[in-house]
Image (cartoon, rainbow, N blue to C red; front, side):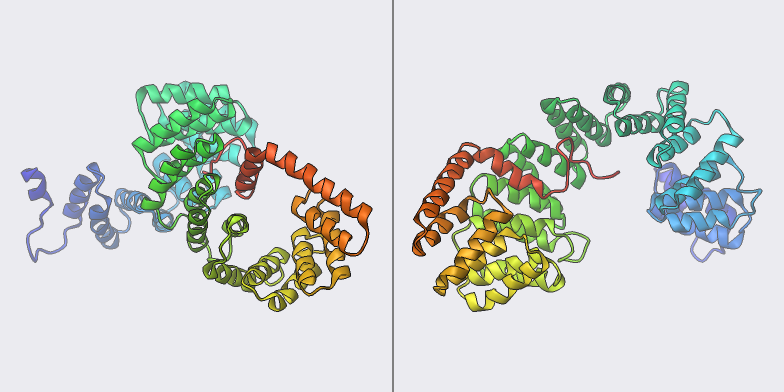
Length: 455
């Protein structure tokens, strides 16, 4: 260690020496100390822009530090002949891929295989890209060829497993992943294996692997995948633990807050659910009113709450102002105002919601309730009838519809509506847990098979 430090320390005031800087940078890179190597290599490239090794190592540093645009520009500054080498084409392809320049990345990976038809890295990268772009046949052929040539290659094995998952060959993905795990345990391998086990209808195995992924790498993605899978299994205490740990570590993750709120809601802790969903509306990389999912979940919890809350009303007002042409946003802002005791202020918002979407059953229902408060019985009756026409299984409406019919002397219709209310009440009580699961999970935008975000 003393020798290593002495080699890295330049004499104070010594003139720049590109050769010495390059040697010092190599020593840093041997220890993956990219930030320390970076200024040295930048100095070398400025002094000697034609040195291919220095430019390549500088691009490696930029890539490792999450700066693919600089890596790409550094390598493209080299003469065409100088950069026509396998390692440079691979790095150019990776940088282009990170920048979303898929056609450019493909051309670089194609060139790698022209330079070396046996390149495992070239075949693995190109194969994965082709599968992602829809050229499944050739992509899988390249991935299988790379894996067959070197079954110890993490890159080839992991990309092959991803390719198999994309094409529904889950048994093949399981074989590739278990082979890799026999050599090396990583969080992403266990995470992908958890997804595979989910697709193979082995939920307990999936949870086991996802939990191991969290143990190895407690990332936001791994904590969410574990919590979401536990929630789908209705293992609420365990799911809550995963989501709480996630929100403590990643407070800006909207989906972790959504998960925690869903656990609380399922446990009938409505106010705690509302608090978590409110956090979700403030979190995330997008503008705060851009993602409708936390607002939908917040609405579900607020509908079940018995306590009017000004913070919820303010949040929905903000959402409606950001989405003035959204029927549901107008409806729920109106609902919050109505619940706060101001029916006259709610009325125009409910009418606007129905102007935007005439089949919004909830808006018809709330409008009917306002008319009933105003003793406009025919208008109230029309609102309730429109609500059940839009949603024939809207249990709560049938009770008020029955009362409205009775109030205007239509006794037979009143009895029919009240009987339908009781029928729906019994059906929904018998399937209460299933309905709650559907309510909680329908707004996530994820299928029943897996919680994976796009890699």
